[in-house]
Image (cartoon, rainbow, N blue to C red):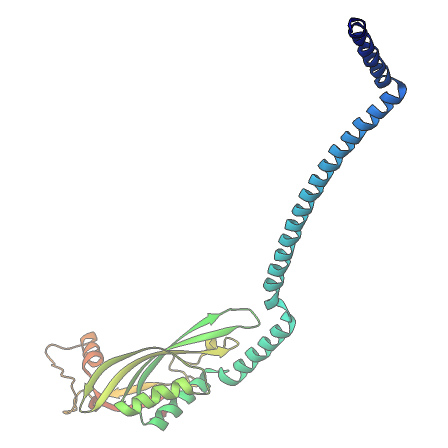
Length: 265
C-alpha cells in the first residue's frame, strides 16, 4: 500500500507534463490561434452588424426627411404650375376690363354721370375733378380722377343714383357719402367718388379753364329768392363773406340754373 501511494505523484506529474507539451506543441498552438481568430472574427462581425443596423436606421431617417422635403417642395410649386397660361389669362382679363369699363376720355365720364342723374331724377349741383397719374410712363399707365360732387333730390332717387353708380358699366368707386342738408323732403348729399382713365387721359382733362373746348360746370345762385336760405346784408356782407354764405347756407330754391359739361340740366 505504501509503495503504491508513493508512485502516484510521479504519475500525475508525468501526465501534467504531457498535457503541457501537448498544448505547446505546433498542433496545439495552431488550434489555439484558430480559436483566437474565431473570437476576433465574431467580435468584428458583431461590430459590423451593429454599425450596419445603425447606418440603416440613419439612412431610413434621411430618406424620410428627403421625402418630406420633396412633398413640401411639390406643395409649394403647385400654384406655379401653368403660370404662363395663368398670366396670359390675367392679361387678357385686364385688357378686357380696361377696354369695357374704363373711359378713354374725360368727356365719356362726364356724359355717363349726366345720363345717370337724368335717369334717376337727381340734380347734380356741382362736381370738381382732381386727376392724378398712376404708373406714369408704363404700358399700363392710368389716371385716377377723384371727384367731389354735390347732389340734391328726394331720398329714393338719391339711393337709386348711388346704386346705379355701383352697378354701372363704367367703373366708379364710391369713397364717401355725406348728408349736407335736408328740407321739405329734399336731401342734399356730398359724394366722393373716383374712376380711372386709360392711358393717362385725365392729365389732359378739359376742365379748369373758361376756354372753348373745355368742359363747363356751373350753377347760378339767386340770393334774392324768398324761398331760399341765403340772407345777405349790404352793410355787412361783401366779397369773400358773400361766397362763404352761399357755400354754407344756399339751398335748392337758391339754385336758378345748372350746367354740367356745358349743357343745362
